[in-house]
Image: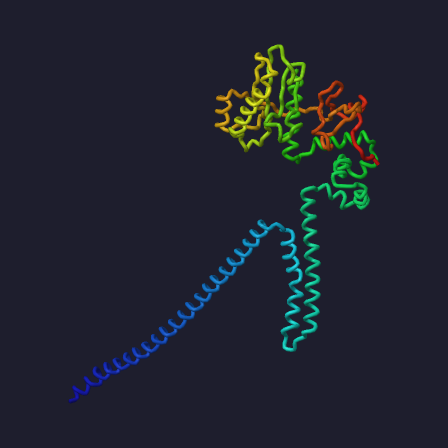
Length: 405
């Protein structure tokens, strides 16, 4: 009996207590684990909800921006297609500038205690201002566009005296014909202090040094440079391209060593060169179409003048290009097949002043003068001068209707 009690107290009871304690701990940790799981699930759901909201916001922002971009693209397309883009943009600018008035108007109209009368007055003021602002902006944009195309206009906008003098001209063509364009290259101080000869020469120098020239001016200068080089070699040269412009049929220069006009009768053998001058950017190769045109216009020239050109006269097509201009591979093949000569001629300085005799009057033209391209140097006593002093020393005066005040 005593032994049994000993076992009970030494073994059974401690084991039972240990098991009970373990069971209690098990249930405690089970409950805690359940709480942890619930907390995890709750936080996971919160994170998922937050993430979904952020994703939805990103998608919404994206759609809003995409819509705005599409709307902006439609506006730009409308502007491009619009026959009145300046008016269209001016109306948008006026809308933007009157937006705050519209906002205040809506506040007065829809606040808890509306001020309808004040809102209506503000609406009328806004619409009147918007209309006037739209007209103002339209003219402002048109003026800025014109100034961008013709920057010399700034000289008149910034000088009230010169602007008022425009009223002396009866029309725009009269303004173009009679306005002294040498003034575009001179300051007011230079214009007022230099002699007429000095300012004409200075204007010419600055025109020659001018870096930004139109493609027409670059092409014209290169043609004149090539013509000068040929004259130095004894050729008679007709400036067909400059004189006839787009009606030159691709014949920029017609060069010959005959003494008489190339359209006269020839009783000796000789050569006529039909020349096209191309001063193209080195990154833009000359295509075969240029060679085809040159060949075609040479054939046309032969047909047009077959009755007045002797059988012994050889007509040769030539393409003159500077060393930095290149031909495409196909163009090279065409030149070879069509027997077109390629002459590399770099730009050389040449006399720019045309000294022309018109109805007995000796007049000279500077490159920026109105009739410069139309003036032809063919008759006896006419020549090209390097300087204003050279032209005036031989009795030539600049042909202009305006005064040099």
